[in-house]
Length: 141
Image (cartoon, helix red, strand yellow):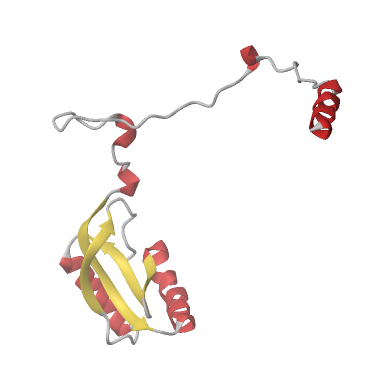
């Protein structure tokens, strides 16, 4: 008991110092971003409207190959990029890499591209219906 009283007295002798340099008036709070709640009949605010360059629509692409070999897919991309620029895509759909070409809005334009690709020696090329980028520059024909 005596030991407990002595330890309490000794603990009381130490002075606790508080850092009083903090000034709450200078505290910069982060901006709180609350979710936007819309009623069903309200139009979308401008910040949520789709950007034209991001718009996708139903369209067509020519699938040239489906392979499990990434090197083969990349070689084909390099070959086709000289003709179709940035409209050559590699889509990974496990376990296959699919090389697709174009952003065609009409099946007729996709068919012309398919015939051109078949003439290059890729006889298994076929047309698929998929989402395409709306505002891509037109394919070089």
